[in-house]
Image (tube, rainbow, N blue to C red; front, side, top):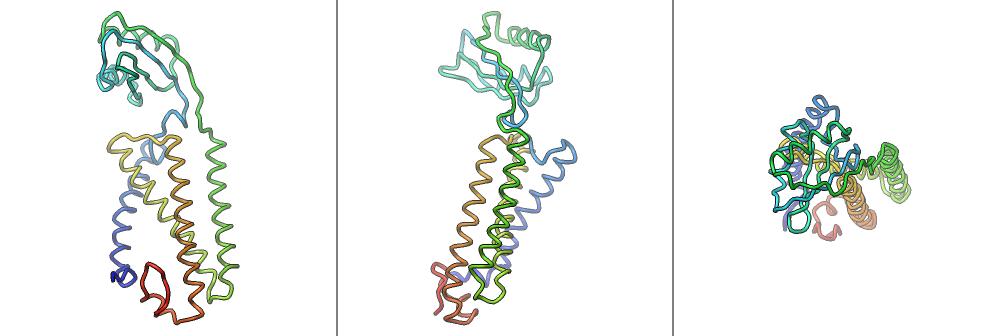
Length: 239
């Protein structure tokens, strides 16, 4: 039987080895760019440009044209058989658009055709992001209140609520920290899926913590704390 609690220092060390570099990456990114990680067009808004080619094109090669023109945040995906490409970049005016299409034709030939060009606003606006943050804060307070009430017959019930919130913050920092490192190293961008992933992590973190704490609450009147800690971790019952 693996004694998890007795080896908790190793798990604390593992968490620190993940969280601390992640925090450093977020601080560095915030200092240099003003944000803890790059934001995708879902947050910032921009333009979507669909281009038709007479032969299959590699996304990386097409992206080089935009990067060379100073649009380093451009993302390119090919559609279907590779003859059509969708380019997502920051907002541009008509003059910039003409210059870019000329650069693309210089690289791939004059047969490049523009299928569609549209400017898009951020799919996730500032209000939505703020609402998500407020929802997390409200949920944290609700969790704290729920655990304090549910554990009122257990000694120090407030500690369980604080521990659940601490576990949730830990899981958020692990996820956001790793993403921030990948954002710096690989250029990953935070989009709508990233926000969904964070909210999913929060949900599972709280659920798992409450399940474990509830088992402790059920068994704590039956046995001493020491026997609970040393019991099989799969069921958290007392021996």
